[in-house]
Length: 123
Image (tube, rainbow, N blue to C red; front, side):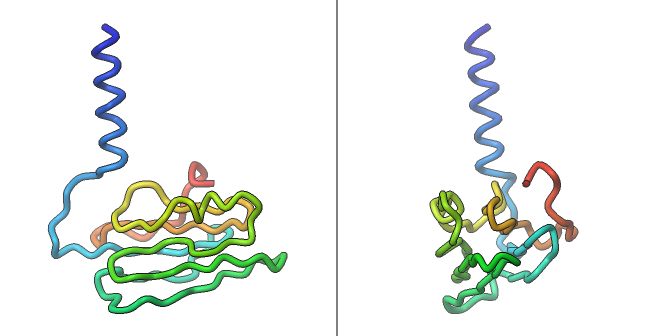
């Protein structure tokens, strides 16, 4: 019984970290939100060189996001814990990059998905 529970837990983790396989023709879109409001969306398959996008909160704190060909990540954050920076760069939809102190979320999705704001679980 314990082995079955362990296998189910392992399967669940694999499904979260490695979502369903999509074809190469589908684009990965990266959406940047602050306080639940969509600020910018990038099609990572169309990015040809590195660029940065800065998000400034009402309190003056900044998040610097780097957009690379095929991936996106938090380069710098004024938050105290820097967990968002430690998440690294994402190239496929799995877990969003979230900076809770600055209310910034980077969410990836496949181009065939509909646009939606991050849900309450993200926060």
